[in-house]
Image (cartoon, rainbow, N blue to C red; front, side, top):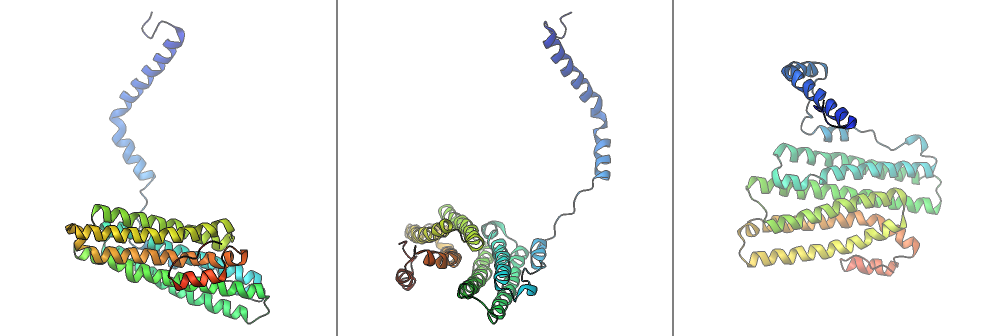
Length: 300
């Protein structure tokens, strides 16, 4: 009478569990057959070919709309969307750099480098597009915005070149020489890389939204990145002085990678300067002095 429990509630629960157990045991002999049937009905999705993401990115339609070129406001919005797309391409190039340092293949590295062709092409098209729009009737504010977008296009093109011709070349060199960074060296590079990726997102947000608080944060991050680069440099030299073999073998690659990440970060941060200058957060004299001294301008 008490086979499944004393109370009615316990009997109901235990009976349900017993039923499920019998059902599982009864179905076990047929699992192989069901797996084959499911495979036939729902075939596996073909694995993506190497570089497919890059090819898809390069085939994306340009956001530059020639039908609105006589309406400067719409044309500049179109150029902004295209700059956002180019920024995303540079982001796709930069994101796997640390993975490539760890275990990148020659084909993966080449596919990432190939994306720089798309960045260069789009950079030229954006400059020519804005120049053509500028030949029409534009307000002073629209003309200034056109200059700012052109400047950022140039900086994105430069950032793409640094990734393709510097960082990705360094990943190939590390692979060819069969070298590994020291644990501390890897940790420093990974931290800097993560910070640049986050700041790139912040910069693209500033590009689209003109958000003043994000622009302020971007300039603060640039200064913080400068300090991190200096700290990483000093720590690396200490590892060299201690005779750590991995640090000695990878010294040039480590230092060049750190410099490249810092430069990319600075190029992305440039999108904040016009906005902060207009708002009064950055004084033009401080901006010029900071650039001349090779440091981030101070907030007013």
